Image (cartoon, rainbow, N blue to C red; front, side):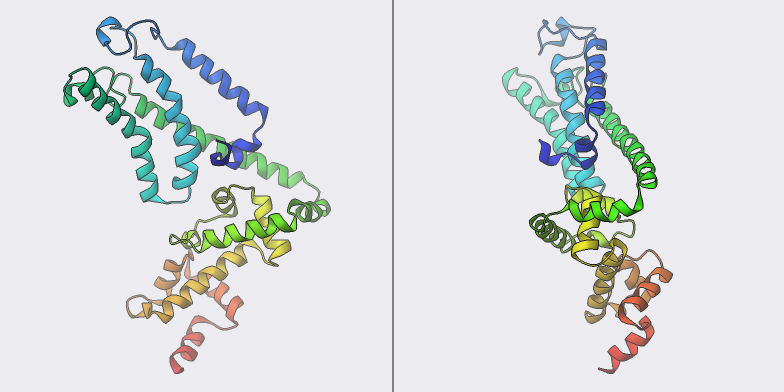
Length: 287
């Protein structure tokens, strides 16, 4: 399970672990559930939720908070994220309904709308786990980013470069560079997202932002913004060669390549190529 956890969880330490233990101790002690009554016959427990629902609740919570949300939602992989939601929240209910229909001779519709339904039961563990896990991740990231910002401001500057050099061994740097190139050459090209950040790259690579920064600064002789802008300019030039300007303006193609504005594109383009886009187009059209 450690391989799918985001960086924040790995680095949070004992405090966050203790928080989770206390949270689930409170939930399981506060929920009025009859563990000894028949798990599959709601008539024997008219005022308590199904034990199966209570057990499934933390599974849905962690699957969404530590897998689907950081892996797909934060990377804006909307199709993959939608499929993960179906897998996490809808598939257990479909399996339960079909099993009840086959083993207990119940109709699919009546069981889907029953009090024990994961989706439409009261309370609905699907909606509660989705809302709580989403709120948890957003709140945790907000606190983490503020704590990280405060730490960066108080860290001595002379030691930072030395620490960055010690972050990655040559072998680790080669492996991380391979993963970074693979990520950027992915069909979804995350750099095309104008809001793509160093932290987003670190999360996608299952590492820390410091290690990604150290790789770029010390092993690739560039910074994150310069590296991303170079990829976006290459994407713009590739679109130019494919004739994308037949249907898009220069600004439109630059936005499609990942730049957030015309100004940022022109500034990065001039820095990378030594000429403006208009000057480059004149040379390109004359060839």
